[in-house]
Amino acid sequence: QVQVVESGGGLVQPGGSLRLSCAASGIIFSIDIMGWYRQAPGQQRELVATITSGGNTNYADSAKGRFTISRDNAKNTVYLQMNSLKPEDTAVYSCNIRRGGWPKYDYWGQGTQVTVSS
Image (cartoon, rainbow, N blue to C red):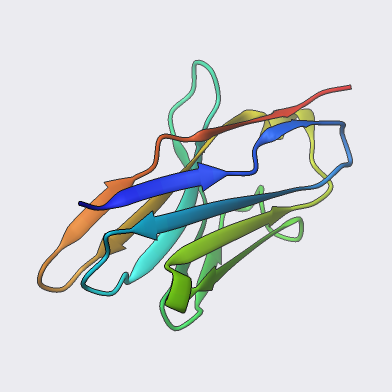
């Protein structure tokens, strides 16, 4: 059974940093894309960043220059280093893993709260 577990969220002051981690277990067929998404209260879930198994990355405009996504394929783990955090970054951050080829799959973690406040 596949499990996706995030960690590393918390309360941080504006301008501070956090590093989120997401570990997937029970994986038999390799993960194509790992990504981070976030959802603030009253808003739709939005993309933060994704990374392919080959290391190609994609960032939302709001994340460019401040956030860095990375992954460890051997550990089925993805990270999100967040610097220069702003109050508007406050949200529940969720990890997504998916595979496009057979067998396809798409799994989400339960999310971790990030609060940026003084």
